[in-house]
Amino acid sequence: MRAVIQRVSEASVTIEGVKNAEIGKGLLVLIGIEDEDDSQDIAWLCKKIVNMRIFNDSNDVMNDSLLDVNGDAIVVSQFTLHASTKKGNRPSYIKAAKPDVAIPLYEEFVSAFEKELGKKIGTGKFGADMKVSLLNDGPVTIIIDSKNKS
Image 1 (cartoon, rainbow, N blue to C red):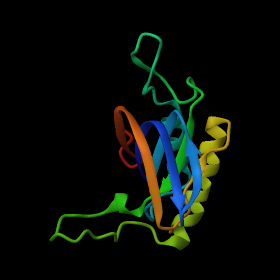
Image 2: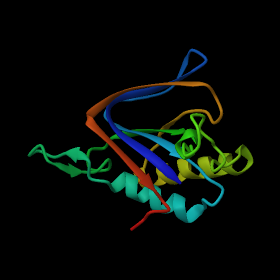
Image 3: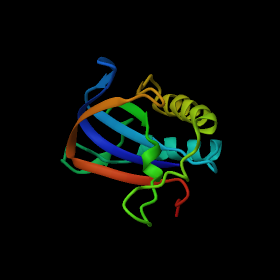
């Protein structure tokens, strides 16, 4: 499971002209799922993201977590995070899980993330054409892969 985490001042997801989710200070998390992912990947990744100290403390040092700042989050499924660009100029998405595998894992991820954070989060809609808007704060963008825990 691969995640791109962006610290934001604000973010939103619009689907078919309707705003599906909107937050202020917090994280926009793009999540890519592959066939080998399971509940252990979800638990590890959710805990890691919610507790990652990437928000500024009172001394303007990145020392606070999403929990510490009572921030919000939006999680958006993005199969393109597993793009392979080794051959030619057209990416291959062969490693990305198909919807029958990815949808239940995405839903489990959202549920686990809400449990770790202690509140509801915003989401996109799996498989939809989404317009994601964000104001990256910092900018701070971090990539995490549950298959590279060390």
